[in-house]
Image (tube, rainbow, N blue to C red; front, side):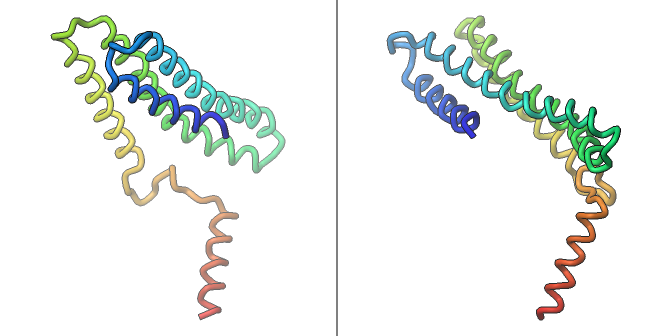
Length: 158
């Protein structure tokens, strides 16, 4: 509940500080503080996901529902890896490129960020493309039966 608003606030503040320019006192320090807050928030979001996968691995040996939930989470592992890779690349590597490159080579960091964004969107679009049997959109039997029941109830009401 706290992490996402804090991350939004840190990103907005980072944009405001970035647009204000380096003439502000402690400009570099504030940029690094907001980057650190952003990275801490990314880690805080990843931690519960990893923790739930580990706890589901332990309980999936005896519980069938936990095994189904673990299968869903491990299916989305590729998605999480892509998202986390993109976030860390755009937060750390691009920031490092901006910091170490000379002024006339600032375009390199912008190009790296844009290429990473393009690659990220292409991978995500490919993962969730419409196909007949997409594993990301599979419903288990309980969800399928509940959806059928809702459709039958709506037809009955009409």
